[in-house]
Image (cartoon, rainbow, N blue to C red; front, side, top):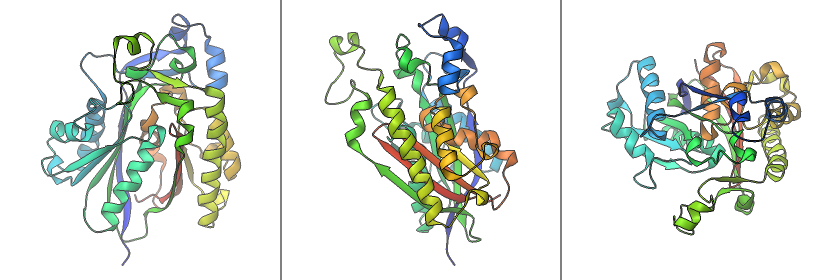
Length: 328
C-alpha cells in the first residue's frame, strides 16, 4: 500500500495592526489607487508589539492547528519552518517554536527559500512521512517582513506584510495528499532580490546600517518578468505531467506577490478566476506565509478529493509547484 503525505489540518495567524494604502500615502510618495492597480494590495498586517518575532506568529498558527486537531504538541515529530526573517541567525526558529509550544519530542530546522519557503518545507516534510519515518510533521511558513523592510523605499514597503500559516502532514493510504512536485532554483537571480547586509559576506557595521543594506532590495521589473514566466511555466508543467486540464483543477493556490502575476499563471493553466485563491488585498505579500494563509482562509470551501495546485516564485530565485489532492 502506497503511503502519501496528506495535509490533515491548516491554521493561520495575522497580526492585528492593519497598515492600509492610505496610511502608506502619508509615509512615502505613493497613492492608494496606484498600489491597488499595480499589485492588488489594499492593506497588510504588521506585527507591531515590541520583542515579538517570526516564531511568535508561527506559535499562534501551530497552537490553533493543534487545538483544531485535538492533539498535543508532544505528539509532533518534526517542525519545518520556511522563513527569511528568523528570530535570530541561530538558533533556528524551529528550535524556538518547539520550545514555546512544548513540542518536547520534535526536532526540525528552518528553510530559507524566500517566497517558496513554504513549498520547500512542505515537500521536505512529505519525505519524512512517505518514508515511514514519522507520523506527524508540521510545515510552517512564517515571516515578519516588516523587520527587513525600509519604510522610506516605496518600491518595497507597499508590497510586504507579516503573517504565518501551518499545516499538519500525516500518512494517508487512500491516495489523497501530495501527488507530485516540481521545485526549482537559480542563484544567478540573486542580484535582483536580496538583503545585502547581515550575513557573513557583509556583517553588520555602522556603515552597512546607514547604507540601508539590512533591508530588502528589489529590482521590481526584472523580478516581475522572471516571476510571470517561472510561476506559469512550472504550474503548466505539473498539470501536463499529471494529465490535468483546467477543468480538473478545483483550486489554484498561488503565492500572493502581485495580482498580475497570479492572473498570468491562472491564464496559462486555463483556470478561471473563480478557482483562484486570493487574499493579497488584505495581507499583501507575507513571503512564506502566503500559501498556507490562503488554505486557511479558504479551508471551509475545500472538499475531499479536490485537485489543488500550489505555485510560488521568490528570491533566489526559487520557484515551484505542488499538486495535491485535498484529504478532508
